[in-house]
Image 1: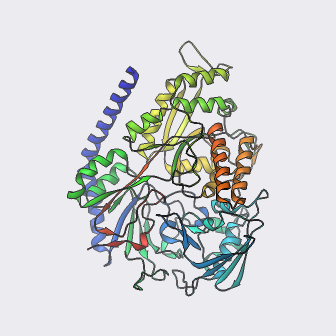
Image 2 (image 1 turned 90 degrees about the vertical axis):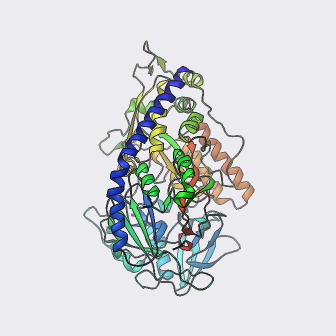
Image 3 (image 1 turned 135 degrees about the vertical axis):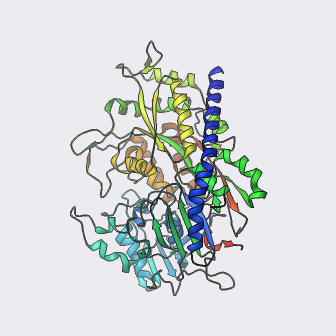
Length: 606
């Protein structure tokens, strides 16, 4: 109890110091940033404008390389279908209709007539075939998009063929329940322009990789990127802003026949501190706060008092659909020279089930919710979003805070305590590891600091190291140079949309990353029995068309995850977003990952 009180006092001092520093920087930030944006607004062309923000620069303009959220494709790209952010239902998008065969192995999509790319080139069935066959199904292209349409034990991909300019047929090796959702934006497969990208697939670099992989990086002039969504990119200044202009060739119209979107320009400011984002919103420099990541809990009470005076509203969408978790690097693989990616001593710890379970028992999630989320968060015990019909409400193994239980598990696994009450393994090695998270998310930084303290209470030393988000992604998705990390993952209705995290071959399966196309070769990769079980369950759930039986399969998947703990789920956000009252047409819920999912319908009231 005394230790808890001291911890609270330390948090109070840290937050007080943070507020003092923020207050001290307000004048300078407003003079510099607001002044710059006001000049930018003055110089801008006439028309309505919406100013939003992101914490980091985009990492690509190429859909196939998309592995971070938020990304430019939320604004620029669409799929054959779309997922409604209020209901979760699949709706027509580039395809106006579709039809399944009686055996559910053939799906025929009919495209809307008159579709065009942003450069005026017709969008036809050739682009759909190009996207699915030449990009997503191309083994030389490393893309997360492929993970969502692997079918069956052999991980086959659907055949796709053009029937005419407006008709495309997909042929599946077996019924595949998630297929329709895999075609849906913004998280599914987004159609790409054949006329602009085909040449880059036919040419290779010095290593034999298609030039497509490096095509449309963020060094590409944004106006040269061809898109089909409501907005096209107009200009990009790294570290400052990305400007989107309404796409005049976008297909959607409102009920009166008026072309969408309504808002002429989107200014996507790069603001690498959430405290600075708050300052910019309060000063009127941003129109939305919390669209890509829910509002920080400590901001809510402050902003609630300012709603009327600041002419904005805080929207509460309920629990957010994403998840937040801590995971260890379980790989036993080596690089091509035989060097282990993880110290073998630490690898033995991480791959011991009792060790992972002890960590879960040692983390005080309720205190995280109380101290950091201000009681607004949701303690998470499942890899599936709470909004999903497949979420298992009862019967999951949970790990309520119990440091005594944690110590018992560790000692059962052969660990012991030395004279200084430090945890050591059976060979006397001090238990110590590095925990990474992204430095620009201060909620995660605060959670990491508490986890460091919680694990110190059971004798474990955590070297907590917040790093740049893009560096974190590079380490966990490419170099494998990490020991433990904490990160969020977007969620939704269909669990198969997270296949790239959970299936063993997935590009986001960071806790035991398999060899990936375009990556340096590795040796000694091993898949565990737990991963084999998850693979089987994912295949079974995708094959099953009876919804009640699918729920049973995904229930078993959740039980396997919670019993084996490849990841340790923490506390999830509540979907809270602050929006200026001049923004009309918002349909906000906690289901979609992006709060502005219906951005094409938004209006700015002058």
